[in-house]
Length: 169
Image 1 (cartoon, helix red, strand yellow):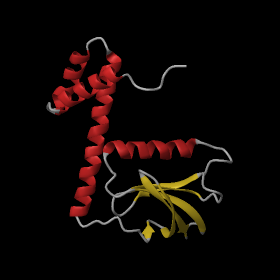
Image 2 (cartoon, helix red, strand yellow; image 1 turned 180 degrees about the vertical axis):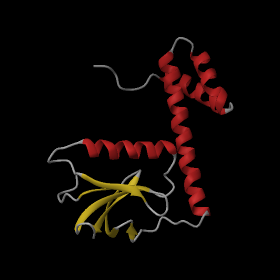
Image 3 (cartoon, rainbow, N blue to C red; image 1 turned 30 degrees about the vertical axis):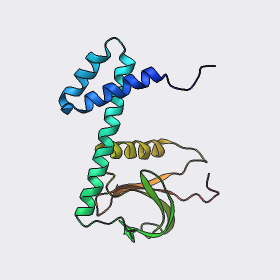
C-alpha cells in the first residue's frame, strides 16, 4: 500500500512555486508556473489549482465584505419568493437549508437551499448550479426531487426540493 503522507520535498516545491507565482500579476502566473515546473505537468497543475482556489477564497471574502458594507446582514430570511421560511434544517459551507412552506400553486412543506450571502463568486455559484442540476436529473426514492429554483431578492441563488423527513446522516 502506498504511503499517504506527502513528500516533503514536493510540498516545499509546491509552496515555493505558489509563493513566487502569487507575487506576479494574475496574467503572468500560469506561464511562469508551467515554465518553472518544466516537464512536471502534475506539479504545474497542482500549483495552478491552488492559485485558483486561493483566488476563489479571496473573491468570497471580498463578496462578504461588500455585502456587509452595503448593509446586507446574514439575518434569517422570512420569505424567499413564494416560500415562507419556517425553520433552519441545516447549514453547510455553501448554504443553508430551510424548512419552508409553499402556498401556491399547491400547499406543501419543502426544503429550500439558499446560497449564503456573499458566497456569490462565479466559482461558488457554478458549483451550486451543478449541484442543483445534478439533483434535478436524478430519479431515485432515496433522493429528494427538485421542485423549483430561482434567485432571492438579495440575489442569492436557491433551489426548492422535496422535504424528506428522517434522521440526519
